[in-house]
Amino acid sequence: MSARSSAPRWILVGLAACGSKGPDADPKKVEALAASMLKNIPFPAAVKECADADFTGTYPLTERTVVKMSKQPVPPEPEYADWVNPTDADFPSVFQLADDTATESSKRKAAGELLAATAFVMFHVDIVDIPIAVGSKELKRGYAGFRAIRYDHSGKATCVRVFVVKNSKKVAEWAQDQVEKSALVDPKVQNAVREDFRVQYKATLASLGLPRPADP
Image (cartoon, rainbow, N blue to C red):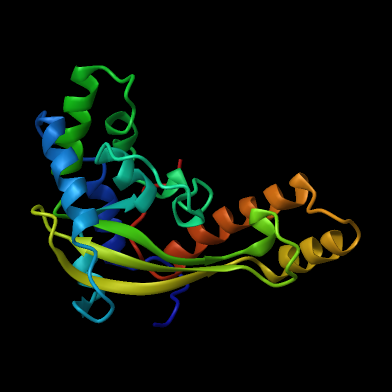
């Protein structure tokens, strides 16, 4: 995969579609879709690699959000942490669907907006190796491996694109210097590494042309 310096035309079409509104829908349909997506995470190489055109009109979802939409408990492992699954990578309507305090009418509206998508892309987390971010003194530049999995409306995986997000070299080296000076990882350093990862995550989605919501 080669990084692109600017978003291609197809992603602009996809982002424009994110502003469209479908009719209200039953939130239970979204819950069932989310459960099906989680059940049908493909084995590596089990489906084809996604082409750029496969992402047209799709709506992006972090794996943590899909778990919450399925009404299943969020696992405690780092792969499901909120800083590994930044909410600004999610299609905006999903927050109503994952919020137990949201009204039924707002959930129905959000369900309609989400289900108006051509398809869905879940950013599945395969591995998280960012020691300082989880409080470990292992001195290394952190990274996480992902698969952008495209699903149809039945929750079947149709293609996948692999990508990696790394901490910036500048922040990684600064954090290692700070960690060497103390017996424990300072929470401020830990949080700085997490915030840098979130920034790099968003930049990686943009550089690879993966679907993402419009910038606020």
